Length: 569
Image 1: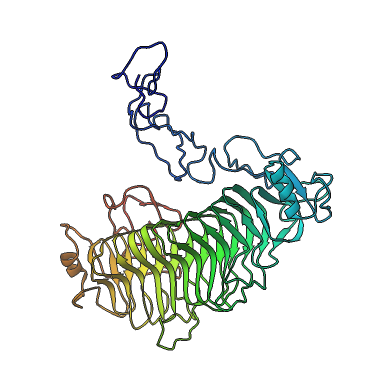
Image 2: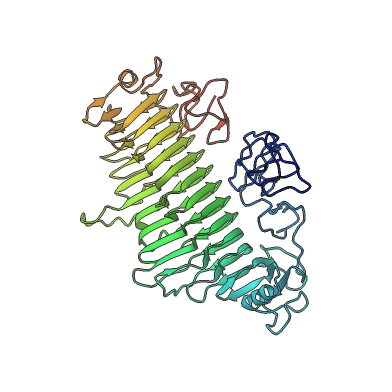
């Protein structure tokens, strides 16, 4: 049977007979698509939710990489590294083989402050330095280095995994009791070697307080994949004039940052929690925070440079104090997903000569192919933050905002959402414009096209929506306590009533827009008596799929959708 795609299954319509199969033929029939090497049973479509190349629970579409045992977390699959349990409650199986990593000499070497580098690196005779432990592990093709609690001032390159938090006597693990710290003597502490795939778990990485290079970072990776699990990283201080510091610096690498804390440190020109070029920066149940004391010219909790992709899930990201402060800044063509997370800008310097660009605070500055902001909060321009310009989200590219809260805080000018290019969709979200003399809740640039459904758009400055692009408003509450300019078009003409919004910015027979006080509580959640309760519609076909509000409540309640990011009743 002819097997054009070399998947081991041939097609019944193209056969030959011989004692042995000629090249391109097999003796197994049943390929439903001989042009797809991954597809041979029934040619159904199956989903890879976590985009790791492994499909879960699907017998119709079979990938050559094998089935996925966890199709939610991309750092768990059959090709991934594994780690020994952090404790009795740790049941995570990263590589899906059902077996924990053994803590013995057949797997790795042992390092302890009480050891000696002339030792063989066994449990009974550990070495003293990480460098020597890694050398022994790599030369013997072992998997890992097991590190007892203590302080290690070293700069190492590794192609093996590093696991900290062990008792130096019993080699039982408790990272909270047996604190393990790896400190950079100068510009770096750990460099994940090119071409390697490693796990780093259960310790602290400390940056130097006297870094001398233009760019310093205690944890670096180039052309590698690593899982950073239960690790605290602090960037240290770069004293170089024009210097920059990053807690993690990754180049063409995939970093899976799980249950970890990253802190940037201080520098003159730039401070970054995680700085990635190419590859994937993935965050899960982690936090990224920055210095709010010593200012830099530019700061970002997460910086995605050209070619990098970012995923932030159930995590928090906060920018640092700087002339321009971002929570997340993307300068890439990759995709950005922010799910069930909190993203905030830092504070600004407050000093402005009116010659350079004014001090700005932006929770998410996005430039790329597409961004999904779902079930998350984005805030900028906090009170006392000295932000002249505040934008919760500033986007260039396709944008989908679902069940999100965008708050521009206090600033002289700004917006909750700025769309510079591309198409946008805003569903069941709350947009709060900046409190200042200039600004809007939603600012659309010429050439953009967007739809808003079931959302609350509250503004305190010029207008609710500055519609220089095309916008459709469906069942939204557009309201201000200080202005009646609900929508301002490219000719600066204002639409001042919900009825006019329905007639000018909605093509449906029924549009449902209102302009009334949404009656927020202190957390920007609507009250039970709010006019936004049950004032929305089913968001399909603009957006389909289950929607939960910011409290995790499945929407709708009682068969009707509320407007805004919260579902009340």
